[in-house]
Image 1 (cartoon, each protein chain N blue to C red):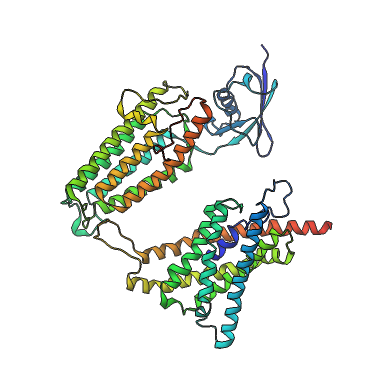
Image 2 (cartoon, chains in turn purple, orange; image 1 turned 180 degrees about the horizontal axis):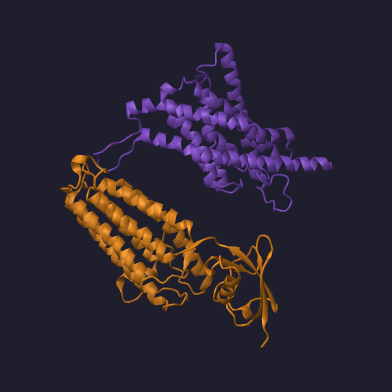
Length: 254
Length: 308
């Protein structure tokens, strides 16, 4: 779901006023876009993020070649993964100050769910770090983010290659389910360890008359994927039809 | 007397939905809505939004046809607001829930706590006091809904009742669960803390009620007039000097009092969420006051004196 939300929810890191739905095709909307300073900043931000996720991708490949197996590759890319995924919190700020025309709520939801998985699940429950499900969502996120951030970079520079647009609106078909599976399996794997350690949980009696069961909370999170994931997935499918068919039309007249 | 013709088009599809001829120039939008309902009975007046521009603001029920910027053939655009439910119904439902639900926890009805606690009673005085305060608070709200409040709009969208009831009923259950729990821990500073908190709660409840009465008296029965509220002889209303929506200020104060009284984190969280929502409403109300009245007192803030 964190994988799904990443592509569906964000309208773009200030793609010069272009939005996920309208993009280059809509001629009727007013294109305000960020100012030149904000655009420069956003280009740098998106380039840095693209580079960061490329580092993670390369790190995965090198670790695989060195080890000869695809197990426990998480450890080789743990630091850049934490750094660049957490860095995405800035995107919430971008929406809040208005240099990116996306909803703060939607972006927050998307970024926080990623950050939650990285820190509150994978980092916090060490036993889960050697699971293959972690590799599943890391690969899904890596490919998605490399494409997404280059999409934004090129959009900001008003020079978006069709290939990138195609990739962004097509690869999700496989990457979403892949990412969601990885995420769910990882959370599921963490459950027994959370229960055993009473991780992040507080029980009665206590001074503030409050209790929290992290194990139950994680189960609720898993259940929430059921209504949320299909909505995001079908939204992207709908966007794909709109955006890719539109461009086909344009190409015909060129 | 020249009669008007009114055509009503769908705001989205521009389809011609209705044509009314021989409409009186002094006809109000409310009357036109009634005429429209005759040909489209599924769209009762409460769910009609009529406007001069498809993307513009809704016309008010009191607006008179003659006074609108239209020719003798007026074109109005219609938008379906969706199924509507009356404010009174929503308020009664959303307030009756917490009253009832809290009592289920207070009386330790079976299947909430362990079987050995069924129908037992807490040994802490503050727990009984909290139940009294919580229950009286919602009884007050129900009575105000029935006898005090004068609503500008009759209805709201139907989906609001589900959203609102989830919020009120959910939080009531969550708070009540901890306060009435067999393992509840009374406040750290004992009776002193409870007494102070009770005083805050009572004062703020009286304040909130005073403001509701003052607002009611601003508006004659059946009318929708809007006036600037001013302090009256009742000292509780003097908060109007500093704040546009003292009813919200007092309401937040009441819940802070209740949180201190019960020393229960869920209550504090409920107060915080309520405060956030009421601040949004207060800011909106404050903005409308400023827009509508040139002579609006400049010292006033929306909800917190001098600050917010």
